[in-house]
Figure 1 (cartoon, rainbow, N blue to C red):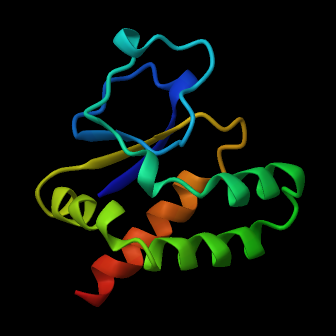
Figure 2 (spheres, rainbow, N blue to C red):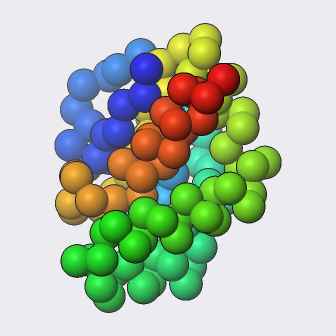
Amino acid sequence: MIICKRIYADKTGNNGYRVLVDRIWPRGIKKQDLRYDEWNKNVAPSNDLRKWFHKYPANFTQFKRLYFEELENNPDSWQHLLLKVKSDCLILLFSSKDEHYNNAVVLKSFLENKLNKV
């Protein structure tokens, strides 16, 4: 099972492997105050793609396609997450205000696609 959770709304403690999937540390959160097992900057969208999507949020479909391409070209960043999903719940932590259109949602879709092919 893969769950996406916004860091600022994460008041309940889901059991599972908790991965921050943002390239930049979330504003207003101290590292010692966030419950996480891993901060995986490498699985986050590149800085160029992240900035582009921030500027053009209406282009979510194109963002998803471009982010999938980045992930395909960087399997070392996400392959270990597939192993975690097989043994535990994987919680993808993100800081975006938009809970439906963000990189964690795309990453979840990407990982689920990979799991279905196995």
